[in-house]
Length: 382
Image 1 (cartoon, rainbow, N blue to C red):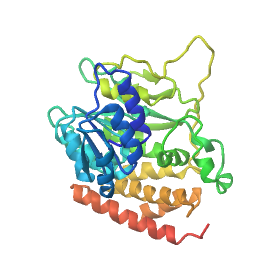
Image 2 (image 1 turned 30 degrees about the vertical axis):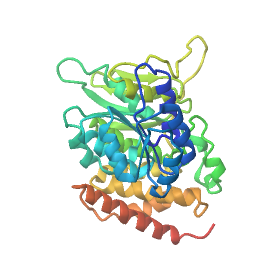
Image 3 (image 1 turned 180 degrees about the horizontal axis):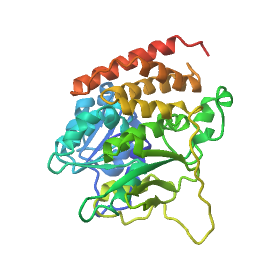
Protein backbone atom coordinates (compact mmCIF):
# COMPACT_ATOMS: atom_id res chain seq x y z
CA UNK A 1 0.00 0.00 0.00
CA UNK A 2 1.42 3.33 -1.11
CA UNK A 3 3.28 1.66 -3.97
CA UNK A 4 4.18 4.91 -5.75
CA UNK A 5 5.98 6.41 -2.74
CA UNK A 6 9.56 5.92 -1.62
CA UNK A 7 8.85 2.78 0.45
CA UNK A 8 6.52 1.40 -2.21
CA UNK A 9 8.92 1.72 -5.12
CA UNK A 10 11.74 0.15 -3.10
CA UNK A 11 9.44 -2.68 -2.01
CA UNK A 12 8.81 -3.47 -5.68
CA UNK A 13 12.59 -3.57 -6.22
CA UNK A 14 12.94 -6.12 -3.42
CA UNK A 15 10.08 -8.22 -4.81
CA UNK A 16 11.64 -8.11 -8.29
CA UNK A 17 14.87 -9.49 -6.79
CA UNK A 18 13.07 -12.67 -5.69
CA UNK A 19 10.40 -13.43 -8.32
CA UNK A 20 10.41 -17.12 -7.45
CA UNK A 21 9.07 -16.49 -3.93
CA UNK A 22 7.30 -13.12 -3.97
CA UNK A 23 4.39 -11.92 -6.09
CA UNK A 24 2.48 -8.63 -6.02
CA UNK A 25 -1.23 -9.12 -5.46
CA UNK A 26 -2.32 -5.53 -4.82
CA UNK A 27 -0.93 -2.10 -5.57
CA UNK A 28 -2.32 1.17 -4.24
CA UNK A 29 -1.64 4.88 -4.57
CA UNK A 30 -3.28 8.10 -3.51
CA UNK A 31 -3.32 9.90 -6.85
CA UNK A 32 -0.23 9.06 -8.94
CA UNK A 33 -2.05 7.31 -11.78
CA UNK A 34 0.83 7.42 -14.26
CA UNK A 35 3.27 5.56 -12.02
CA UNK A 36 0.59 3.19 -10.74
CA UNK A 37 -0.21 2.18 -14.32
CA UNK A 38 3.47 1.55 -15.09
CA UNK A 39 3.78 -0.57 -11.94
CA UNK A 40 0.66 -2.55 -12.87
CA UNK A 41 2.12 -3.22 -16.31
CA UNK A 42 5.30 -4.58 -14.74
CA UNK A 43 3.74 -6.54 -11.86
CA UNK A 44 0.33 -7.58 -13.26
CA UNK A 45 -1.40 -7.54 -9.84
CA UNK A 46 -4.91 -8.81 -9.29
CA UNK A 47 -6.05 -5.42 -8.02
CA UNK A 48 -5.02 -1.77 -8.00
CA UNK A 49 -6.56 0.75 -5.61
CA UNK A 50 -6.61 4.51 -6.08
CA UNK A 51 -7.59 6.53 -3.02
CA UNK A 52 -8.72 9.57 -5.03
CA UNK A 53 -12.02 8.26 -6.36
CA UNK A 54 -12.19 10.90 -9.11
CA UNK A 55 -9.26 9.15 -10.83
CA UNK A 56 -10.78 5.65 -10.88
CA UNK A 57 -12.22 5.85 -14.41
CA UNK A 58 -8.93 7.06 -15.91
CA UNK A 59 -7.06 4.30 -14.08
CA UNK A 60 -9.50 1.62 -15.25
CA UNK A 61 -8.99 2.61 -18.90
CA UNK A 62 -5.21 2.37 -18.64
CA UNK A 63 -4.40 -0.72 -16.54
CA UNK A 64 -3.67 -4.04 -18.25
CA UNK A 65 -6.64 -6.23 -19.09
CA UNK A 66 -7.72 -8.42 -16.20
CA UNK A 67 -6.49 -6.06 -13.47
CA UNK A 68 -9.35 -5.00 -11.21
CA UNK A 69 -9.65 -1.36 -10.10
CA UNK A 70 -11.19 -0.11 -6.86
CA UNK A 71 -11.18 3.33 -5.27
CA UNK A 72 -11.39 4.99 -1.86
CA UNK A 73 -9.86 4.55 1.59
CA UNK A 74 -12.20 1.68 2.47
CA UNK A 75 -10.88 -0.28 -0.50
CA UNK A 76 -7.35 -0.06 0.94
CA UNK A 77 -8.36 -1.87 4.10
CA UNK A 78 -10.37 -4.51 2.28
CA UNK A 79 -7.46 -5.27 -0.04
CA UNK A 80 -4.97 -5.45 2.82
CA UNK A 81 -7.10 -8.02 4.62
CA UNK A 82 -6.82 -10.39 1.64
CA UNK A 83 -3.02 -10.33 1.17
CA UNK A 84 -0.59 -12.74 2.83
CA UNK A 85 1.78 -9.87 3.63
CA UNK A 86 1.02 -6.17 3.45
CA UNK A 87 3.67 -3.45 3.35
CA UNK A 88 1.98 -0.32 4.66
CA UNK A 89 3.85 2.54 3.00
CA UNK A 90 0.90 4.95 3.07
CA UNK A 91 2.00 8.40 4.23
CA UNK A 92 0.49 9.86 7.40
CA UNK A 93 -2.63 9.09 9.39
CA UNK A 94 -4.36 7.74 6.27
CA UNK A 95 -2.46 4.47 6.79
CA UNK A 96 -4.37 3.58 9.96
CA UNK A 97 -7.08 1.64 8.13
CA UNK A 98 -4.49 -0.58 6.43
CA UNK A 99 -2.83 -1.35 9.77
CA UNK A 100 -6.11 -2.22 11.48
CA UNK A 101 -7.42 -4.33 8.59
CA UNK A 102 -4.23 -6.35 8.16
CA UNK A 103 -3.84 -7.25 11.82
CA UNK A 104 -7.57 -7.90 12.26
CA UNK A 105 -7.37 -10.43 9.44
CA UNK A 106 -4.52 -12.25 11.19
CA UNK A 107 -1.97 -11.40 8.51
CA UNK A 108 1.61 -10.12 8.51
CA UNK A 109 2.02 -6.34 8.44
CA UNK A 110 5.27 -4.73 7.37
CA UNK A 111 4.76 -1.32 8.96
CA UNK A 112 6.43 1.69 7.40
CA UNK A 113 3.53 3.98 8.34
CA UNK A 114 4.56 5.02 11.83
CA UNK A 115 1.71 7.50 12.33
CA UNK A 116 -0.99 4.82 12.51
CA UNK A 117 0.73 3.02 15.40
CA UNK A 118 1.68 6.26 17.12
CA UNK A 119 -1.78 7.80 16.87
CA UNK A 120 -3.72 4.63 17.62
CA UNK A 121 -1.34 2.52 19.72
CA UNK A 122 -4.01 1.55 22.30
CA UNK A 123 -6.30 0.44 19.45
CA UNK A 124 -3.62 -1.44 17.53
CA UNK A 125 -2.10 -3.34 20.47
CA UNK A 126 -5.02 -5.77 21.05
CA UNK A 127 -5.03 -6.64 17.34
CA UNK A 128 -1.46 -7.92 17.60
CA UNK A 129 -2.92 -10.79 19.64
CA UNK A 130 -5.17 -11.94 16.77
CA UNK A 131 -4.06 -15.46 15.74
CA UNK A 132 -1.71 -15.19 12.80
CA UNK A 133 -1.20 -11.44 13.13
CA UNK A 134 2.41 -10.29 12.92
CA UNK A 135 3.75 -6.74 13.03
CA UNK A 136 7.23 -6.41 11.54
CA UNK A 137 8.61 -2.85 11.59
CA UNK A 138 10.03 -1.53 8.33
CA UNK A 139 11.62 1.59 9.82
CA UNK A 140 15.35 0.96 9.75
CA UNK A 141 15.66 1.75 13.48
CA UNK A 142 12.85 -0.50 14.67
CA UNK A 143 13.82 -3.24 12.26
CA UNK A 144 17.29 -3.04 13.84
CA UNK A 145 15.86 -3.42 17.35
CA UNK A 146 13.64 -6.27 16.15
CA UNK A 147 16.78 -8.04 14.92
CA UNK A 148 18.75 -7.26 18.07
CA UNK A 149 16.01 -8.75 20.22
CA UNK A 150 16.38 -12.06 18.41
CA UNK A 151 19.77 -12.40 20.10
CA UNK A 152 18.24 -12.42 23.56
CA UNK A 153 14.84 -14.03 23.16
CA UNK A 154 15.66 -17.64 24.00
CA UNK A 155 15.61 -19.28 27.39
CA UNK A 156 13.74 -18.51 30.61
CA UNK A 157 12.81 -14.89 31.20
CA UNK A 158 12.46 -13.90 27.55
CA UNK A 159 14.58 -11.12 26.12
CA UNK A 160 15.52 -9.43 29.44
CA UNK A 161 15.70 -6.14 27.55
CA UNK A 162 16.95 -3.22 29.62
CA UNK A 163 16.90 -0.28 27.20
CA UNK A 164 17.07 0.68 23.55
CA UNK A 165 19.09 3.32 21.74
CA UNK A 166 17.63 4.85 18.60
CA UNK A 167 20.19 6.37 16.27
CA UNK A 168 19.51 9.54 14.27
CA UNK A 169 21.55 10.84 11.37
CA UNK A 170 21.01 14.36 12.66
CA UNK A 171 19.56 15.44 9.33
CA UNK A 172 20.88 18.30 7.20
CA UNK A 173 21.12 20.73 10.13
CA UNK A 174 23.23 18.71 12.56
CA UNK A 175 25.48 21.09 14.48
CA UNK A 176 23.43 24.17 13.57
CA UNK A 177 21.83 26.30 16.27
CA UNK A 178 18.36 27.83 16.39
CA UNK A 179 19.59 31.22 15.19
CA UNK A 180 21.06 29.68 12.04
CA UNK A 181 17.96 27.53 11.48
CA UNK A 182 15.71 30.59 11.53
CA UNK A 183 16.56 31.16 7.87
CA UNK A 184 16.32 27.54 6.69
CA UNK A 185 14.86 27.11 3.20
CA UNK A 186 12.69 24.31 1.90
CA UNK A 187 15.46 23.21 -0.46
CA UNK A 188 17.86 22.90 2.48
CA UNK A 189 15.36 20.92 4.57
CA UNK A 190 14.78 18.45 1.74
CA UNK A 191 18.52 17.81 1.21
CA UNK A 192 18.96 14.85 3.56
CA UNK A 193 22.62 13.78 3.84
CA UNK A 194 21.98 10.04 4.07
CA UNK A 195 18.50 8.81 3.12
CA UNK A 196 16.32 9.26 0.03
CA UNK A 197 12.76 9.69 1.31
CA UNK A 198 9.51 11.49 0.56
CA UNK A 199 9.18 15.22 1.38
CA UNK A 200 7.14 14.84 4.58
CA UNK A 201 9.43 12.33 6.27
CA UNK A 202 12.51 14.23 5.03
CA UNK A 203 11.32 17.42 6.73
CA UNK A 204 10.48 15.37 9.85
CA UNK A 205 14.05 14.08 9.82
CA UNK A 206 15.40 17.62 9.64
CA UNK A 207 13.41 18.66 12.74
CA UNK A 208 14.04 15.32 14.55
CA UNK A 209 10.26 14.89 14.77
CA UNK A 210 10.76 11.70 12.81
CA UNK A 211 13.00 10.44 15.59
CA UNK A 212 10.51 11.61 18.20
CA UNK A 213 7.72 9.66 16.53
CA UNK A 214 10.05 6.66 16.42
CA UNK A 215 10.51 6.97 20.20
CA UNK A 216 6.74 6.60 20.65
CA UNK A 217 6.69 3.77 18.14
CA UNK A 218 9.50 1.95 19.97
CA UNK A 219 7.49 2.19 23.18
CA UNK A 220 4.46 0.69 21.43
CA UNK A 221 6.36 -1.99 19.52
CA UNK A 222 8.63 -3.30 22.24
CA UNK A 223 6.94 -2.30 25.48
CA UNK A 224 9.95 -0.37 26.75
CA UNK A 225 9.38 2.63 29.02
CA UNK A 226 10.26 6.15 27.92
CA UNK A 227 12.97 6.43 30.56
CA UNK A 228 14.65 3.44 28.89
CA UNK A 229 14.66 4.89 25.37
CA UNK A 230 17.65 6.99 24.35
CA UNK A 231 18.28 8.91 21.13
CA UNK A 232 21.82 9.51 19.91
CA UNK A 233 22.98 11.30 16.78
CA UNK A 234 25.03 9.01 14.53
CA UNK A 235 25.81 10.83 11.26
CA UNK A 236 27.20 7.79 9.40
CA UNK A 237 23.81 5.98 9.65
CA UNK A 238 25.56 2.61 9.81
CA UNK A 239 24.47 1.56 13.31
CA UNK A 240 20.71 1.61 12.87
CA UNK A 241 19.85 1.11 16.54
CA UNK A 242 20.94 -0.85 19.59
CA UNK A 243 19.43 -2.92 22.39
CA UNK A 244 20.98 -3.24 25.85
CA UNK A 245 20.16 -6.27 28.01
CA UNK A 246 20.14 -6.68 31.77
CA UNK A 247 23.62 -8.22 31.81
CA UNK A 248 25.11 -5.07 30.27
CA UNK A 249 25.50 -6.43 26.74
CA UNK A 250 24.56 -4.03 23.94
CA UNK A 251 23.69 -5.56 20.58
CA UNK A 252 23.74 -3.36 17.46
CA UNK A 253 22.62 -3.89 13.88
CA UNK A 254 24.96 -2.50 11.23
CA UNK A 255 24.53 -2.02 7.50
CA UNK A 256 24.90 0.65 4.87
CA UNK A 257 21.79 2.87 4.75
CA UNK A 258 19.42 1.05 2.39
CA UNK A 259 15.70 0.77 3.09
CA UNK A 260 15.50 -2.36 0.95
CA UNK A 261 17.12 -4.30 3.80
CA UNK A 262 14.30 -3.77 6.34
CA UNK A 263 11.73 -4.18 3.58
CA UNK A 264 13.23 -7.53 2.61
CA UNK A 265 13.36 -8.48 6.29
CA UNK A 266 9.62 -7.84 6.67
CA UNK A 267 8.75 -9.70 3.48
CA UNK A 268 10.89 -12.75 4.32
CA UNK A 269 10.32 -13.01 8.09
CA UNK A 270 11.09 -15.26 9.95
CA UNK A 271 13.70 -16.10 7.34
CA UNK A 272 16.24 -13.76 5.75
CA UNK A 273 15.96 -12.28 2.28
CA UNK A 274 18.50 -13.96 0.01
CA UNK A 275 19.62 -10.81 -1.83
CA UNK A 276 21.97 -8.60 0.24
CA UNK A 277 21.10 -4.93 0.48
CA UNK A 278 23.36 -2.57 2.43
CA UNK A 279 26.22 -5.02 2.94
CA UNK A 280 29.21 -3.72 4.90
CA UNK A 281 32.78 -3.77 3.59
CA UNK A 282 35.01 -4.22 6.64
CA UNK A 283 38.17 -4.40 4.55
CA UNK A 284 38.25 -0.60 4.40
CA UNK A 285 38.76 1.68 7.43
CA UNK A 286 35.87 3.75 8.68
CA UNK A 287 34.84 5.51 11.88
CA UNK A 288 31.57 5.64 13.81
CA UNK A 289 30.57 8.75 15.75
CA UNK A 290 27.86 9.27 18.36
CA UNK A 291 26.72 12.46 20.07
CA UNK A 292 23.70 13.66 22.06
CA UNK A 293 20.96 15.56 20.20
CA UNK A 294 20.58 19.33 20.58
CA UNK A 295 17.18 19.57 22.25
CA UNK A 296 17.16 23.37 22.22
CA UNK A 297 17.32 23.60 18.44
CA UNK A 298 15.43 20.37 17.69
CA UNK A 299 12.51 20.86 20.06
CA UNK A 300 10.24 18.37 18.30
CA UNK A 301 12.15 15.47 19.87
CA UNK A 302 11.32 16.68 23.41
CA UNK A 303 7.70 17.27 22.40
CA UNK A 304 7.42 13.65 21.26
CA UNK A 305 8.75 12.36 24.57
CA UNK A 306 6.22 14.59 26.38
CA UNK A 307 3.32 13.36 24.24
CA UNK A 308 4.38 9.74 24.71
CA UNK A 309 4.56 10.08 28.47
CA UNK A 310 1.13 11.78 28.52
CA UNK A 311 -0.30 8.81 26.61
CA UNK A 312 -3.89 8.30 25.46
CA UNK A 313 -4.58 10.60 22.47
CA UNK A 314 -1.63 12.94 23.08
CA UNK A 315 0.58 11.16 20.51
CA UNK A 316 -2.28 11.31 17.97
CA UNK A 317 -2.66 15.00 18.78
CA UNK A 318 1.04 15.70 18.18
CA UNK A 319 1.24 13.59 15.03
CA UNK A 320 -1.77 15.37 13.51
CA UNK A 321 -0.41 18.79 14.40
CA UNK A 322 2.92 17.92 12.85
CA UNK A 323 1.33 16.79 9.58
CA UNK A 324 -0.45 20.14 9.30
CA UNK A 325 2.66 22.12 10.27
CA UNK A 326 4.92 20.28 7.81
CA UNK A 327 2.38 20.77 5.03
CA UNK A 328 2.36 24.50 5.79
CA UNK A 329 6.16 24.58 5.67
CA UNK A 330 6.22 22.69 2.36
CA UNK A 331 3.79 25.26 0.98
CA UNK A 332 5.96 28.14 2.19
CA UNK A 333 3.40 29.46 4.67
CA UNK A 334 5.57 29.05 7.79
CA UNK A 335 9.27 28.78 8.57
CA UNK A 336 11.25 25.76 9.69
CA UNK A 337 11.38 26.82 13.35
CA UNK A 338 7.64 27.42 13.26
CA UNK A 339 7.01 23.69 12.87
CA UNK A 340 8.13 23.08 16.47
CA UNK A 341 6.34 26.22 17.66
CA UNK A 342 3.03 25.08 16.16
CA UNK A 343 3.45 21.57 17.56
CA UNK A 344 4.26 22.95 21.01
CA UNK A 345 1.27 25.28 21.07
CA UNK A 346 -1.08 22.58 19.79
CA UNK A 347 0.15 19.99 22.28
CA UNK A 348 -0.42 22.46 25.09
CA UNK A 349 -4.05 22.60 23.94
CA UNK A 350 -4.48 18.82 24.23
CA UNK A 351 -7.86 18.08 25.80
CA UNK A 352 -6.81 14.91 27.66
CA UNK A 353 -9.17 12.67 25.67
CA UNK A 354 -8.88 8.90 26.06
CA UNK A 355 -7.84 6.64 23.15
CA UNK A 356 -10.50 4.00 23.79
CA UNK A 357 -11.85 3.65 20.24
CA UNK A 358 -11.04 4.38 16.63
CA UNK A 359 -13.64 7.16 16.69
CA UNK A 360 -11.87 8.77 19.65
CA UNK A 361 -8.55 8.70 17.79
CA UNK A 362 -10.18 10.11 14.66
CA UNK A 363 -11.78 12.87 16.72
CA UNK A 364 -8.46 13.72 18.35
CA UNK A 365 -6.76 13.81 14.96
CA UNK A 366 -9.43 16.11 13.53
CA UNK A 367 -9.43 18.48 16.52
CA UNK A 368 -5.64 18.73 16.61
CA UNK A 369 -5.54 19.54 12.90
CA UNK A 370 -8.04 22.33 13.38
CA UNK A 371 -6.15 23.78 16.35
CA UNK A 372 -2.80 23.54 14.53
CA UNK A 373 -4.28 25.37 11.55
CA UNK A 374 -5.43 28.12 13.91
CA UNK A 375 -1.95 28.50 15.36
CA UNK A 376 -0.48 28.62 11.85
CA UNK A 377 -2.89 31.37 10.83
CA UNK A 378 -1.71 33.46 13.77
CA UNK A 379 1.93 33.41 12.70
CA UNK A 380 3.50 36.30 10.83
CA UNK A 381 3.28 35.88 7.02
CA UNK A 382 6.53 34.79 5.41
